[in-house]
Image 1 (cartoon, rainbow, N blue to C red):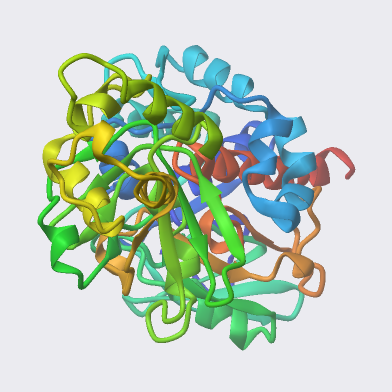
Image 2 (cartoon, helix red, strand yellow):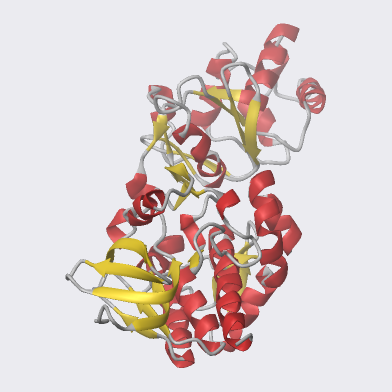
Length: 427
């Protein structure tokens, strides 16, 4: 435990992905670094991520990856992603003895499929560079103290440091220790904080017909979220899964931060599912008309199965037919023009009632956090607080499923670590 009269060089709060990465870079650059972690092990959230496989980054290039964070996020991350592109993250883990493999949806996993290898590599790299890690020593208060930062811990101790890095994460998966502690500290420093909400989290629906589709997944669909006026807030072409509570899978989860912010748990929002995003409406109508001439007067479900996406499960087709006000067993040649139009509209935009999200306990990340205008995007230094740096999920960044959150954590941590190391070189 640090004595209040001692001044540490760099104090990092949080031994997760961003904290360990930053500690390694700063220590390797000549800084004396201490990392404080509130729980009894490092990288708890890393260990739980990706179904314990840990999707560490993306196969996308830095520009393409940055665009997925929206206009503000892309602009903020531009320097970080150029400085540490996804390919360099993979190379760094390779150098640490963790080979990686590519997976569908631009994902990158450790070849072992074991998140523990990722956590162990991060911890070993930080310790190997000279960083000291102290577990079971969480911060409870942060304040400026003259030319230093004063951090008080749960055990009654205190630390003083010339530079302080906040890498404590957000509020998602609170059982891993990320309980939102950092937001109060930031507000106490009179910094702007965008209210945090759960993100990359399954959606809930009160519609019984949605629950009846539990277990059905549609791999090639597109989900689009609309506001009450019909304006599309965002769309994602990714797999969609129906659950006993609503919707899960990458596409709905990528849209979940809008629902979490939608007032009263998403009131006025509508989610529509396009089951054939690669075909426009006219192409679908033409395919239905053509299938009407097939021998044996095929039923609609069989005719749809001839399309490029393959057969539609019976329960799912019945839901689409119900939305089009058609009988599920209707033959293709029994469709009139009105029925064909209604079916095409249902296939291109099935309305699914959405009422909210399943909450923090199942959220992969947090949307919201320190307002990006408060931070220098080239160093992660907080503009109005000399010596303070913020990295990772505590920042108001929100990217989709696919290793983007880890990529942002590593890239922001790299910039902070380099800035801290540069301060040594300038002396």
